Image 1 (spheres, rainbow, N blue to C red):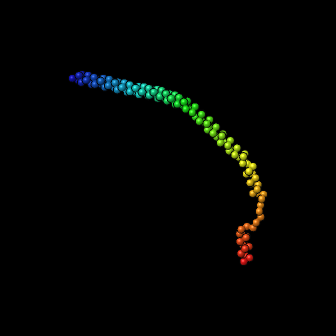
Image 2: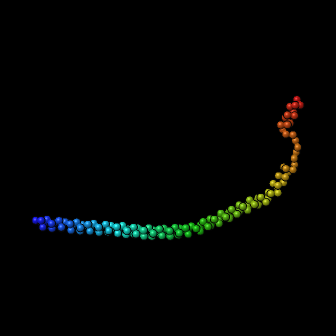
Length: 124
């Protein structure tokens, strides 16, 4: 009976070793599957990124012409307004200088209004 008991224990030990091997293989399989999933996800992310970048470049190229033409229109309008301001300046420059010189040169000497009041109240 001791031999049978010993053989039963031996069978249990072998079964335990076999179970440990199976668990180890399952762990290795799981680790490998995680690595594969990460690499596959990385590939998909790269493909998606490239697709979106090319889509963006196409979008950018299609609207780049619009911004260039809009910029040219703004530049033309700015140039026209600047030219109009310059023309107005040139047309009115002499008139403004004459008015300023008239104000500075033509002085009418007269008593200050406060001095006039003071002089008028003393006379009373």
